[in-house]
Image 1 (cartoon, rainbow, N blue to C red):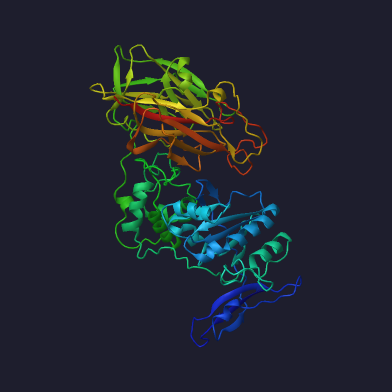
Image 2 (image 1 turned 135 degrees about the horizontal axis):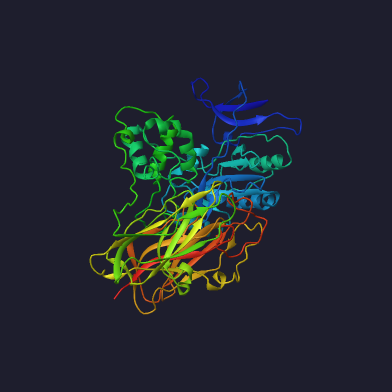
Length: 607
């Protein structure tokens, strides 16, 4: 039977009793406890409470945070381990810094036994810089997770730094919450009388024993997630949904449901909360620490906090209009940029119901008899269910099959827009457009006849838009050096590089990473002629289903000789939920069961 020990200094005051310990009396060991806080809190009173019913289990929230080294750390990822421990820290809290040696000692003892340790920053700062410096200054070799807006702290119910949360990976239930040990000041070394709460809990858990105590009071600096009062559906929530969600969640669009009114949202409140907390929705994967992008669909920390608090409160309707119902978005047109000046099509295709489908290539002549400049080119799949991606490029093998200068492209969810202002693409007369079609079987026989809409520029542009890619040629032609071992969880990709121009400055507009199901992270860096480096784009959690073109808010000028260097990694482990087969060695290939590592770049060369 579970018991709760409570304490107060004013027993006659209603509501003054607070929980100290949650414990279970067992026959496996002697039980004893003393209250370290009684040394500094006079006249402490205690009482024992027996809950009327067992407490409901607390399940680990499906959180996905980025650590101080720019890596994604999904909480539920290490399902092959035995337990995951989260420990909150504050970079300005002296107790946090002083607790590092104890935490590292626990990691060294229990890590080999299958326990994963993460530190979670509780500073509520928009930048990870302070976490990086704190980890460096205190020689922390554990992941320190950034929690902007303290969403994770709120989901955990955290109240203090150095508070620990331990979860079993068997069912992701919490088996311990509380202090590392009973020291009030971690600057003081532990003694033979120190009550080592977390250490004892982990030892009991690994031995298959009842964990007791399962809850203890945390000692540290207060953790206070921001509170947003008087949240209104009409005033606060609907505008967030309209700006970040409705673009896909409309009738006939790519979203799995249409946000047409309040009732739809309230009925799906639990699902929406799950998706936004895990950062799966909205589908945006660029790290906000680096760069600014015009097509950023992510929720800000304040927007996410507002939405989650409203959902936690039962998603109340409140008063006022329903903006989702009163102001529905206009239907998505077949051609978002208007009717093209010309349209070319591939032959009608029959798509088999099952099995891998080899890439298909089609050469389609340009409809123009003279050289023309284009201001936009839009790919329109007729059957979006089967089209995984499309590349269109000038049709000769000298173009490296789309790697060196593809002309237009389509991936699911990508917004079709004109070329950057002041740029265009030249189409010489007699050009062949080569379509590279990547189809995916759906379980039914399907058909498709993808189209390419061409939009003429009224005059030659100031600069030609060039689309090229950073890739490793030896890997691309023959699979040399590409070998991802079975089960490898973080296998580095071969570095891919591109030098846009050795003689002139260039203006960088857009970046688009491309990998397959085992792709896990991707980073673009500019290496300048003086060998200094700048991160242009970091994608800590690459998602094959959302191969986004990241458009810089302000085009970036790169001096002549600048190299664009791409690094990343693959996840061929069973923990990768999209891994087709973690038991095989993976090499380069065009099918999604194989792998690619390509960094597309859109830029123009300056005079």
